[in-house]
Image (cartoon, rainbow, N blue to C red; front, side):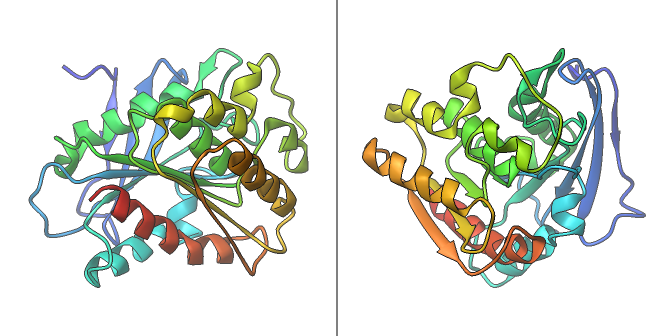
Length: 263
């Protein structure tokens, strides 16, 4: 029996470009949460890996697909043989104010929503993921903070971690939103501190940032601090700003990286 009180899955009669939509009711939010899912067509496997993509502030479950064409990018790379077939799970952050930052606060457990509910819902409702054991996690901006922190906090769940233009500490939230999230444990406020705490067990880590991004100096500092802490990682800078054209282009780097992590 499903642990979700209610579930909804979009009808294949109306889906487009291999995108499916899931809504489940979970006590972690509490209420309902949405997930957009890209499922490669024409495959009968039941154990395709799941790649979770976390969006940034102001966004929702449709952002990666309908602003960043993530599903089209994945399908292009799969068709060309550059990456193995994989499912993209693109959840909302829980829709708290302008951004939940994928943390546990105000009576909601946005972290467990991502770590537990999202993969469980995908395995329950998407036949190609029913027996999946391989997961990777990535995100942009606020989602980069969420993905890198969650991936480091739960290293046994993920085979690879990637951040694009990531917020590296919760104290940078003021660049994007006026809401204040309080009473968060110091380790959970910092990608660096979470990675230091779980240094011995981290999966492969990569992150990148645009050279004209307002978060570039924070990302450079994280790279410096991880290096000084002896934490293995790959960091890259590319031309670009804090915008969708950058994330749409460099999602390719993340998916290629995850392909190597899962082989």
